[in-house]
Image (cartoon, rainbow, N blue to C red):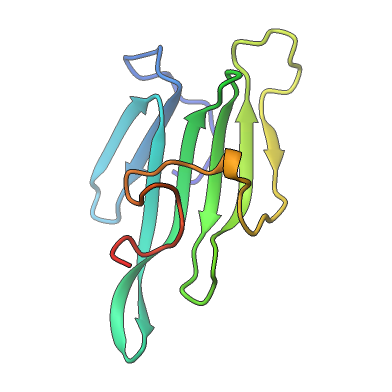
Length: 133
């Protein structure tokens, strides 16, 4: 699963994004969607006790101009804001674009307000790694 190989579109080919997930136990799923918010949590020790912390988030959405954007954010309980480590853009409907994917790997301490991602796990926008916080 750790490759960027081309995969066939799922049944709903009009969907903007496709996500696939597999676990060590052999469980798998794949789905097409128009937006996406996925977090990966891991066990940490903080203030003398263990807790689950959402350390990575992947957020995908379509911007007003039609650009499809996937952002990868890292969350750390010691940081005030998440760190965006990747922003990947595509414009599948624009036949003049010669680059399939535009990848920006600059680290951004806080996405600009217009670039903040609405997440079903946090409201109103991404602000930390622990949804219970």
